Length: 326
Image 1 (spheres, helix red, strand yellow):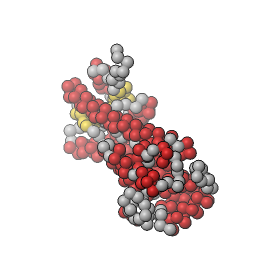
Image 2 (tube, one colour):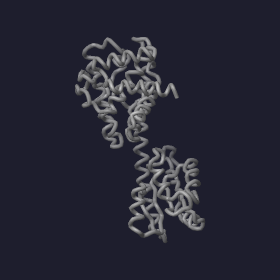
Image 3 (cartoon, rainbow, N blue to C red):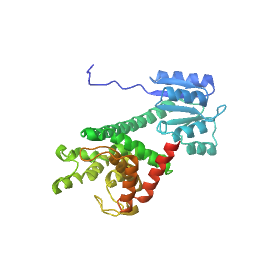
Image 4 (cartoon, helix red, strand yellow):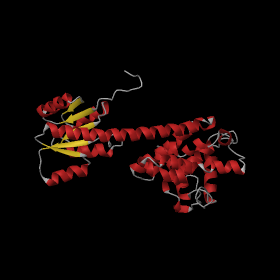
């Protein structure tokens, strides 16, 4: 076999049914189709299996002792780790309200008992294809995050900067009570906000300060360059305002668009605040690292002068104090 041709990974399917005979029959049927199948007989067993062997597809019976299929489905779809796993609810209930309840729980598809093999395989193939597309998108995002880290690696003085920003920004999102989608965007934004610097020459990127007017114009293009790189991925659409706007200033003196106040998207303002803090407490060739209290005073002074959102600066340091006291 050509070493550059990878064999396709066998899909993993989890069958959850409290009826042992039904679970065994479905498992044998799917195994005959070439799938790797594991079974669970209640929600607790299913949760253990999912943690140990993350499946590509879940077939879930609705009526089970203890936690119902509806409840388990809802919990899996609310968890960032499992929400993109296709989930098919298997039910003998024909009532319209039961199907609506399943849809509200987040089910991707339904199979009614008795199950016909042709229909089962058709649904499984369709949903596994969708899962492949989702995995490819996640892989593309991982590649872009790696590129973001490669930008950081070009400057030894910024080591760990992206990881710290990712952590601070997502913590700030939770502190402010933002939804999980926004928290995930902030975490990814920590890695991707400066992706556009991949197009900035080393002699400009590593200079740090005292840039010539021409060099400064090159540097100022990196937010729009990063936005252009990420725009084709629809899954990163929520990140685009972070990437484009994280160098805007509260008083309108920033770039690239001269936005002011709440014209600057909230997620961009959050990342901006944590970015400034990390820059202040980190040593660079052209500046010493400031102690936390000095950094806090500097940011409050700059916020008062119109550079940063004063409310978010206050909330950031409130979050740090709360974390320190915990």
